[in-house]
Amino acid sequence: MIATAIAHPNIALVKYWGKREHSLNLPAAGSLSVTLGPMCTRTRVSFGVAERDSFVLNGIAQSEKETARISRFLDLIRAMAPRAGFATVESSNDFPTAAGLASSSSGFAALALAASHAAGLDLDHATLSVLARRGSGSAARSIDGGFVRMAAGIKLDGTDAFATPIFGPEHWNLHVVIAVTTEKSKDVPSTDGMNLTQRTSPYFGAWIGTVEPAIETASAAIAARDFERLAEVAEASALQMHASAMAAVPGVIYFNGTTIDVVHAVRAMRVRDGLPVFFTIDAGPHVKVFTLADSVAEVTRRLTEIPGVVRTIHATPAPAARIVERVA
Ligand code: PMV
Image (cartoon, rainbow, N blue to C red):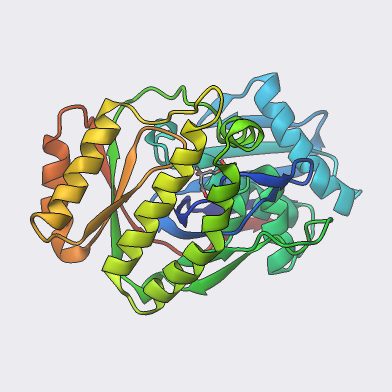
């Protein structure tokens, strides 16, 4: 069987940073995100025709190390569908990996969906989100579209650590302008950064204490389409996550000089000029700037003028992951 799936990346408004268990990839706290398009990952999986797993990304056969990560993930599928043999996985992102758009979120969501269908499994929503989580924590959230809440869960087997959509993409016409601050991609991988933070940062416990209240505030702000309230809680979550990471030993610093310049420019746009705008930053130096439809052109223009901003990428809330092709 062959199946092709499409999934969109997501950006967290309340961040995930830290694990309560490593082998099952269980988050130490919840998170809250918005799934974004038009950019997407498209992944085609066929089982049973090859003599070993292969993984082609953007037309390039991937290294043994990259393929091994995919194979370990496919083993989870084979454990549920023992008749599925080796797989051929072809994946492409229509956005640059260096854009800091968490290609692992759309990547493992698309792979979970395509591979489970290709193996003849029809997994329920929670099981699919749990499966995607095993590939990458943020991928659990890209199974859904729009505004998504991820539960940390309390069960040892992780079956309660999955994402749930809270509002569809049509609920609120938010816009995101991503200020790309370098074309290089050599950040500390998110898992390494969060593990070091958890092991060595004296602020890790304090950080985790901020998460659930922030999720409640952010959910209420999204429900009420209250931009100012969301701005406050989302910026705080991003900075609190980064503060905990910077306090690790050695400190994990994802910002470059331009990151800081963009942060100040966004603050000035909001506080001095009254534009609806706020920022968030993930495990890389790019700045994701949220705004509303009427201000997209102005915000984009101003971001582009900041020295060091290489280019901008525009995104809006997108739908859930879906199957686009199935061949028996
Ligand atoms: O899904 P991972 O393991 O790449 O971790 C994502 C971590 C952040 O992007 C920094 C935050 C988040 O919640 O997406």
